[in-house]
Image (cartoon, rainbow, N blue to C red; front, side, top):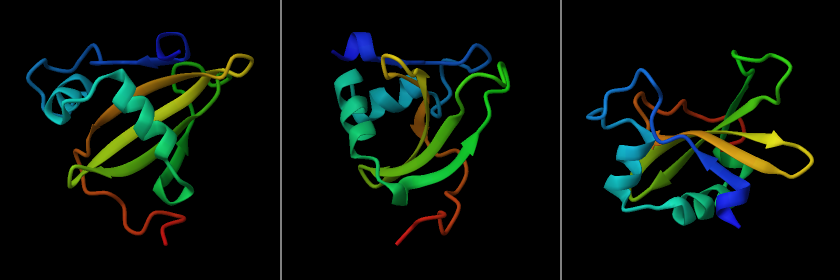
Length: 110
């Protein structure tokens, strides 16, 4: 069940509501809901992997994993972590159009 297993952060505190690079605005532009985001997360492959980042708010927490996926001809920056290892709950902190060019090549890109 998506409501139980996936949290999506629509907008960070310091982001403007008009910023096209927020998760909320990207989801609106793509006409995506949480189910669509979940499907994209399930479709991630090792070739989409960019980097692993420590959680700067809590260094003992699980790390974030960064991916890039091409969705509707645009690169989307995705940053997720397994929030709860026991339940497998996923926290998606970023799912937005890439603000900067995607690194090329990605570490495991074809």
